[in-house]
Length: 155
View 1 (spheres, rainbow, N blue to C red):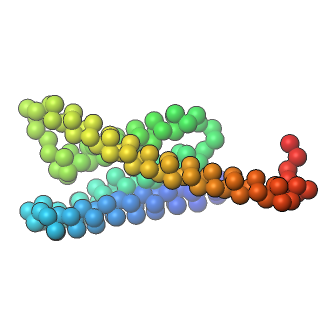
View 2: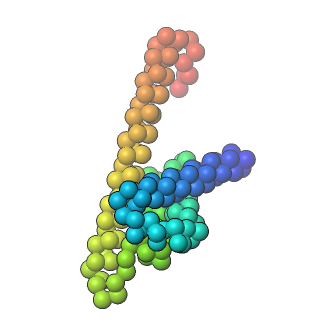
View 3: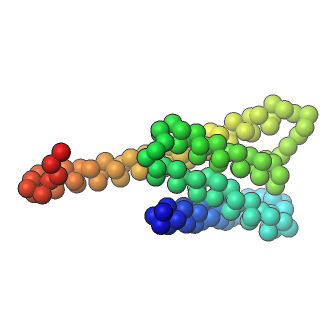
């Protein structure tokens, strides 16, 4: 139980840091390229920051699901994606990150699909990065087993 509390706090902080990082970069981009958007962000900064943190926790913090061995990989991905997008999209609409036009359903659907594509792209980058790390660790363990065969686990 103590292990899961520590992991939960770690992933919660991970999500908060990602949300804040994305907000800072968004503000920098607005500062450089779109002063009007920057003014809107600053006028409502408290809610914008809270939305970024909430979205960061929902998208980054829920990655803790990959630490459990009880769920199949597809369920983990669907849970992570479902919670992440289930929080992001309503937050994005509420805070006008994505403009909502009631008469233009296709526009809203396309924005949702674009958001899903971005989420999937970010997820794929993390997946490939972590897969590379796992491969390096496994290669090193095989090297150690060859160097010290007497210490290798018997299975």
